[in-house]
Image (cartoon, rainbow, N blue to C red; front, side):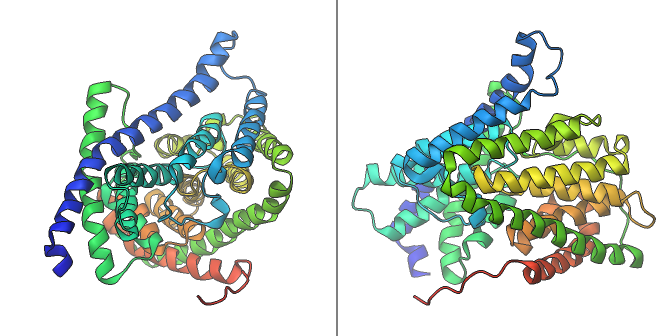
Length: 425
């Protein structure tokens, strides 16, 4: 309470409001740049070469180029292109100013050319780094505690509406960073202030630029009345299935990671070719390239809106190809784990909803929550991701999501590879 009343903390809140504006603007245009690169290489460029649609082989050279660019960023640029996604979702780091170009370059090469990772990790690093830069320019002798708070505030602003709600982004960062007690309140207030300002800025830039929204928005799904006993049984099944699939993705990434690190300039392009091959294999059966490639942020609303057009064998093949491409991307590229996990969970839930006793909304919500908790290891955030995005249906389906998330979290912990114990201190 004494710190909350102090003039220094009031100045920190003012600083959070001030830096929230440019950081949110930078995050908005970064997301729009990624979308523009994806459209150019997968839509405009094929048209320029005379193709009505990208030919079947189109992702192969693009993912190979992506591997070369990401490998070069990791090998030669400061900061190694950002946080390796195989180490888990761990915000709170403070990138040095010299590391930000490498983070952005690796993220653009990964996300723009089709690797299966999301933009949240680069955005968090971008927000934290820009916040620290602003403080150091204004006050070079700023204490480390102030730098840590401002770095967290910048991250809040950067992902303020990426997940469709500033509350979701704030909760994600708070749970992942492990801050609790009185410290949580001290960090949360400036972070929420920056996130609120960032949300307003995203809305304003959508209107002014006409580029369209950069945040996730799911379509309206059929109404869901209430859960029943059969659906609670499905929660156990979906939680167990997500634990198996998600653990398989993580084990694949951890298995490949040492080989990538030893020969990064050679193996990263090979990883890109593997991702492209999986996309080509799925497309050859009549599917869409965008279902396997990219993070799934743009493809998830279309998947839900057109769920009736997907057959069960097609969805099973989609989950298999996307999961393998996701595991390979985790081992070699740079990005975040949230959107691919959500897409995998939603596709699996849609496939299971063709079976008796499982409505579409319940299957999608439980699939998203269960798969997210396996890959993120954040149970509370996973429940919110699966329910807040479903608007009016979310509250009714939340008990089912909680059961699926708990089952998946416990089983994934039992199936996870044993990590070496770290010494105290």
